[in-house]
Length: 565
Image (tube, rainbow, N blue to C red):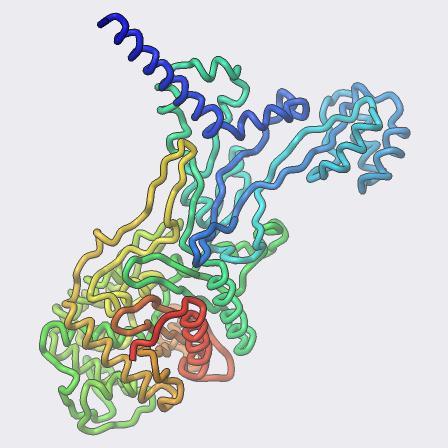
């Protein structure tokens, strides 16, 4: 009886092992065996390019390809086998656009065995070429990186190109950041099928495939396309040097859309003359953001209790510190007003008053607690960190100017992260583009950082600053004409002078910024926009209010967000 049981369990164990190996062979490495069907097209010195995919995620959670592989064929010559080059040219030129001089130059290289004459050839044409049975003409299968949406999220996706060792690798964006996941090892492609099935199961679990996979992003393609359209419109209308934007869930850190105008076509990137268009200023660029920093200053004052929304001060129109005088944007005094009006009218002297109540050290501590001088940890390469050196100064003037976003340089993504603190109950999130990694082993890694969010201001402070920013939209922004009666929107504009190289500021060059979130007390989205050196206009309220509100209305309708008031 014991012997029967032992045999029975032994057979079950063997069956489990075989089923597991078959799973790895048929499902995990299925594409490798599919490639064997095309083995006739692969020469010993020619490997087929392989790489994982990147996906956008539609609002219904279905996936849309953002980066994939396209398949075609290479037509090449083996000059050593060619006897009648004229005959070959006449036949091929009827099917392929081949330059006569180039063809004969390659066909006559008798010392060579491989001369490529055409690539990305379709299967239909290959069948016609095969039917000609031309001696010396060879066909190899090829795959190349393909981006179905051409320009969508170009600076975020990045592309694949040769490195210094002539290897195809990710060079920018997600392609670079997740290169180790997206790269593929073809070491097992031509292993005998039955050897693969009966090989040690441990090998299948510990090979390179354990870290290889596809990247599923949180980028929603319709939202991404809408954002890009709005950014392009702003840049064109105001002849800006650059316009950028980010749409994020301020609670989870998932990014729905991010882009910069101008952009480029990922499928024709080699035609770009200015390679700076490949960089991503949303994570690499440093800017003095201006008045969108004022709510962070105000929140610090509220959090410590040194002010409330009703706290009043006497605005005299000018403040001199350390021999320097600062003014409100219009150089006008306001008299005795409260903190709500400081935000409504975007008053530099008002937030300087808050710093005076906080004290320089406490103010600097709060600004750093927002993560403004740190890398955010976003999963994109080349991230820069902010410059808050002025907040180490013994001079009061540095802290006063920092309170309204001048004298400190920040990346857009770090700015978005800090502003999300105001929206999400006071927590410092980690922004990210990837939502999930689907490994070739069949396992998944869901990417979430919610549990790692750090509390930096009290929830009550977040609620109060949100209420104040809703008042800005309802009563002050465009004189209250853009308020949405059934939706609470918290927002703030920013206009900053652009610093000259060395010292001082230009009088006629500005950076305009705008951020807002909604529904204000349980936000689904935070939208951040900025445009660099717009022409013919002075303030961000003039350039960015309309695109911001258009994006808000689009998101409300697209996601069917219910009214909150």
